[in-house]
Image: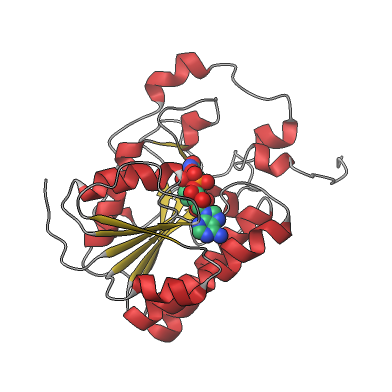
Amino acid sequence: MTQHHPKPILLTGASGKLGRMLTKALTAHGWHLRLTDISAFPDPLPPGAEFTRADLEDGVTILKLAEGCSTILHFGGVSTEHPFEDIIGPNIRGLYHIYEAARREQARVIFASSNHSIGFYDRIHSITPEQPFRPDGYYGLSKAYGELIGRLYWDKHDVESIFVRIGSAYPEPIDARMLATWLSYDDLATMMTRCVLAEKVTCHVIWGASNNTRMTWWHGDARDQIGWAPKDSADPFAGQMAGKVSTNAIAESHMGGAFCAVGYSRKARS
Ligand SMILES: NC(=O)c1ccc[n+]([C@@H]2O[C@H](COP(=O)([O-])OP(=O)(O)OC[C@H]3O[C@@H](n4cnc5c(N)ncnc54)[C@H](O)[C@@H]3O)[C@@H](O)[C@H]2O)c1
């Protein structure tokens, strides 16, 4: 379905895995995308898209890129666990630049948050977005910060946000954990169109997972408010993924998986 969206949409992280996929999917709707990334855009630019190479740490350029935009899809930044010093610039200072731009433009922010903001919950639980953050590393901490800065800008400046706590957005599941956390590319793309088109948004959380039977960990998000429901499921991959688990007990018992085990130094408790 082609839907005309009059104002441009800024997409950060455009040269990344999800950014490239979303560029294709959203320009196919006839939308005008302003793409940006610190790395060159690796694909031919589709009609309706323009690309500017920029560092999220460069606040002046981010302000310029956001001029006249209705929405910012913020997918740029360090996307896996790294030392704090690698995260703080792109992810923390970068988020401040994105929210300042959103405030200036009164643009809606759709933030690619992560399950790693709550990664230290045990998999036996089922949690709602109201429960406290339990980041599983510096990366997850930066995602929690993103959700908090979004809340500040809503409470103080009326900036609308949707925080998508993405599970595992991959072409297909690649291990047993993803039988719960997998989010298909199609489900992510339809979610993004709903996030952009939803009439009224405040400060919402959406769990980014497909319709997986094993997704018992997360419930109670704002999908009904934006009119999104996943269509795909990891279930048909269950046979192939059986036994694709690590030998690390910390990774296997927590929602955040392998990220929880990075640098883990807590003593075993009785
Ligand atoms: N893929 C997943 O399963 C998943 C899960 C949870 C959250 N996310 C989030 O979704 C977003 C996209 O994920 P992805 O898998 O496409 O990751 P990716 O690493 O492929 O893409 C991230 C992009 O951000 C860019 N970037 C990094 N530092 C930058 C800087 N200083 N300035 C400008 N651009 C910079 C990179 O060049 C890269 O193209 C990320 O924010 C990630 O944290 C992804």
